[in-house]
Image 1 (cartoon, one colour):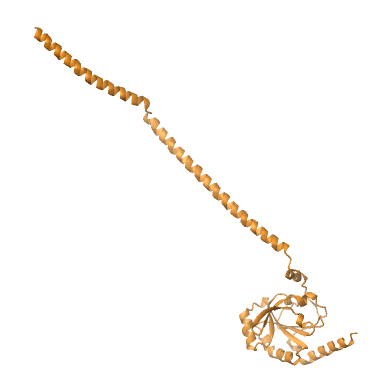
Image 2 (cartoon, helix red, strand yellow; image 1 turned 90 degrees about the vertical axis):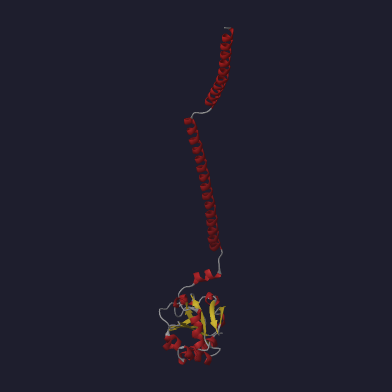
Length: 263
């Protein structure tokens, strides 16, 4: 009997021992799981937090893009401001710096036969082609001679046909009369065309190129057109038929008499 009781007690003790080990493990696992669950956000909260983080990142990105755009606009405004400042300074300089050319241009008025030419007519410089070279010259050297201005164009055959006669008259009356060809800018002749035409006549004549001044003093609608100047006065405006030796003699004789009668 005692042996049975002892055996039962041992089995009971063993069962209790095994129960304690498994229970303790299970209870510990449950406790740990409970602690994790209590200190960890639920799944739905985790998703909301993740969305919030994404929105925050997106907001920061948009903020940076806005700052960059504002910086680009500011930089562009600074560039434009500098350009506008430079343009304004340029126009101010142009407006405040007077030039002799501007003053003379303001004085240019169409002249009539019989009128006395202004002093600026003789001092204004022109682009002159002579013997293959181009220089800037005034008309002062011709002031005390009979000056014949011959307005012409390279495409005008009537103009070039008269060149030989003009050269002959100039040589015959050397020191008394001078022929100066004038090629206006409005003819659209190029320096190359003018040079080629002059070479055809052995560069014996002198011409003003790209003229915008003399053609304003002596307005005309056709070429050839001739202006006769002596003693500072406009004596005549004519066509090619007036350019004759007899007319030159008459003008030079008259000028000589006027000089002789002057006290």
